[in-house]
Image (cartoon, rainbow, N blue to C red):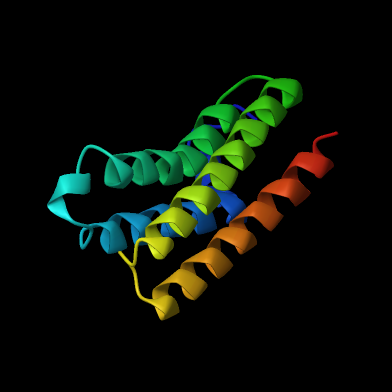
Length: 119
């Protein structure tokens, strides 16, 4: 597990990284009043997914990696809620909401499969 930068080879990390990048981009259009609220929380939760995969991959054991994958899965669920909340507030249009929730489901599914493979 401890191979340096081995996390970049993980397909789930690549998808999670793309997803976090997308979230950063779309949240730039959120109202300025949300800078320290919803924007910040959504960005941190989205970024937590690939960063936990990277940190977990850098640990020495399968059990530790599994723990970080589980945390990443929790962050994906947090993003699900926050993204839905942003959509209800109409900070994103319907098309963006559907696309991003689909992307989030894909990342969550990959995380779940990785978690199961580490059992």
